[in-house]
Amino acid sequence: MSNIILTGDRPTGKLHIGHFAGSLKQRVLLQNSGKFDEIYIMLADAQALTDNADNPEKVRNNILEVALDYLACGIDPEKSSIFIQSQLPQLYELSFHYMNLVTVSRLQRNPTVKAEIAQKNFEQSIPVGFFTYPISQAADITAFEATAVPVGEDQKPMLEQTVEIVRKFNSTYGETLVEPQILLEQNAACLRLPGIDGKAKMSKSIGNCIYLSDSEKEVHDKIFSMFTDPGHLKASDPGKIEGNTVFTYLDAFAVPEDFAKFNSPYPNLDEMKAHYQRGGLGDVAVKKFLNEVMQQILSPIRTRRQQYEQDIPFVIDVLKKGTEKAYDKAAKTLEKVRRAMKLNHFEAGLKLQSK
Ligand code: ATP
Ligand code: MG
Image 1 (spheres, helix red, strand yellow):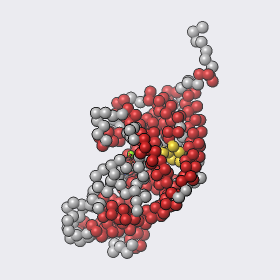
Image 2 (cartoon, helix red, strand yellow; image 1 turned 60 degrees about the horizontal axis):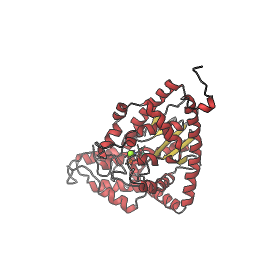
Image 3 (cartoon, helix red, strand yellow; image 1 turned 180 degrees about the horizontal axis):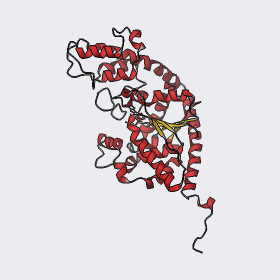
């Protein structure tokens, strides 16, 4: 069996450091590991419309932005096919068939959808398309016969639901679909990176983000405005690490070499945390260090992004070629599904059974 990756993002805004920590960084590593036969990265524009139906312009405008973010981070179009979800009608058809295999109560139990419904104040008026988007994600994943799906932790319930759909489909219609596995980031701080407000997960829709395309000054200013420990008023006060976003970001992004490189008085993060907890270490010093760590990561990404911005026809060509390749793959899977579901009537030959 081939090793195949399917992953993606909703083009609802530029990508941020939560995407980088939770999924993008790992995608690039997996892409370059040589362990995968095929890699598909989807711009989930149709899914983005499930809660942005009245704003198609926003979705369109973000297609190129997200594609630029991918290329800037090191997604290589020679190794990974970047494609646009809406251009593959096969995905809509698969979703329609899978809807017969999922109950309304099962969808209602999905914790990520529940949280998003609350966040978007949808309680009284949930669009059906939004409610059923975990089914469309199962279509996306299975269309590519994906064995591995590198995504953030909020996607875990989607993967569980996809596995259930695969099993139900295969037991009902015969072995057809491939069961995927979620690939979660190992570093716990990266799984669900909080926003700079320290409240919810960093999310395009909430606007609490540091974007990969932010300027050096924007990154600096956002870091210096970040939520820390509200009880840590003076540098001499003992401070809390738990729930302190600046330390969560250091957990996610600082590497051991950074301490010597940026002339930190601490040999490692544990010592820095210990001093903060004892009292005597101010927020400004911690934020200054975090700023150096983040600028080091973001600066080459920003430069590469600016280079690709100069050649948009190349980016469009990458999307066209990726979409063509993805189309062919999804078409093959849909053919298998139709055959398994006995929907290939003319190919199989219709016969009158009653005579
Ligand atoms: P939206 O607000 O439109 O839902 P988003 O910021 O949540 O946008 P998505 O496109 O929904 O981004 O998510 C794309 C991928 O990035 C998913 O795999 C998701 O798990 C991961 N991801 C998003 N936000 C974070 C975060 N804060 N920390 C870790 N991973 C994240
Ligand atoms: Mg999301």
